[in-house]
Image 1 (cartoon, helix red, strand yellow):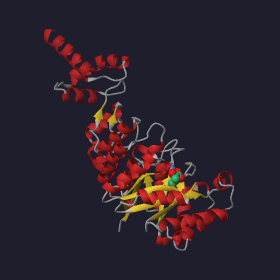
Image 2: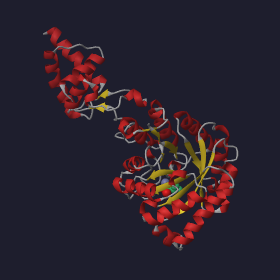
Image 3: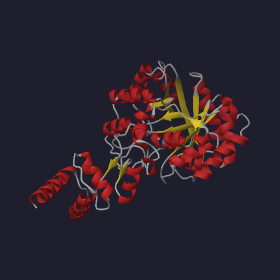
Amino acid sequence: MEQKVHIFDTTLRDGEQVPGCKLNTKEKLTLALKLEELGVDIIEAGFPISSPGDFESVSQISRIIKNATVCGLTRAVQKDIEVAADALKYAVRPRIHTGIGTSDFHIKAKFNATQDEILARAIQAVTWARNFTDDVEFFAEDAGRTEDEYLARVVEAVIKAGATVVNIPDTTGYCLPHQYGAKIAYLMNNVPNVDKAILSCHCHNDLGLATANSISGAINGARQIECTINGLGERAGNTSLEEVVMVIQQHKHLGLFTNIKTQMLNPLSREVSETMRVPVQPNKAIVGANAFSHSSGIHQDGFLKNAQTYEIISPDQVGADGSKIVLTARSGRSALAYRFHKIGYEFNRDDIDALYQQFLKVADGQKEVLEPDLVQMAKAYLSANVTA
Ligand code: KIV
Ligand code: ZN
């Protein structure tokens, strides 16, 4: 039987940490409703103690979201947890996400503490949070660089204290996919009470491996992935929601599924990009402007014969505008004939051979040959051939 991977969206928290991306309450509410419609299981709405504005946003999101779990982030600090609980008090399904750094870098440099002291603080934080809600997620910050044995001790202890989800963040995006997968497998095999909680992947993209690491985590037993629309997040970003969802959908043999309405992926990507004022790179998987564009002659010829030669996903599956045949100096005759046909000109093979030479001259002089260029070329060709 297929197993569900819960999608935990943190666009409104980790995504919003991107410089210049801060959202006001109205913008957060609008996006939260869209995320719920998209089918995400958990919306991390913010970090309530961080500012009165974020408290208000989490509080208002809690009131309007009816199906998804609404989550608030905290440090392993009592006041943070109390404030988060207050912000979440109207939520139908509230979750407190609390945690602390577990790698030696964090334990020594950030906290000047010992492993045992951090373990005690982790247990304490989960215990405080459980006073407010049954749904408590614990994050072991920098788990990617935390030694497995100690991490397993922490995970076992926080589950015993009542954590229902344990987040294993690769905070610095350091792990390779097989290492991150092995870390999840180690926890699945060595934490005696692991069946009482869900392990979660929260992978950053510093080496461009966030999606691969999250998928590797899911293959090895994690059943929640934390991600953001367009991969927004600290530094090089977080795991991209659209990518992990489509990997899971494309690779059915993994035996996994999500509840995401994939047709909403492109429209929501655009909305997030506009609201947060961060353009999407054109070659971004699934939602980039070129994700369904074909520009070289070899690809265009194959695509026009059968789209599946060069597309593994159809644009309508992910709400994209449609496949595009882009004309550049690398394009071929089939593409040229196709584009003429699209604007109402039917040319035979000899016409196209002649027009193609003209086309190459224009194409060599500019980045892309556009519709007005084609119209001009067609008119010039037809008038030359009628008068001849
Ligand atoms: O990257 C990280 O470790 C985080 C935690 C706060 C979950 O964002
Ligand atoms: Zn993060």
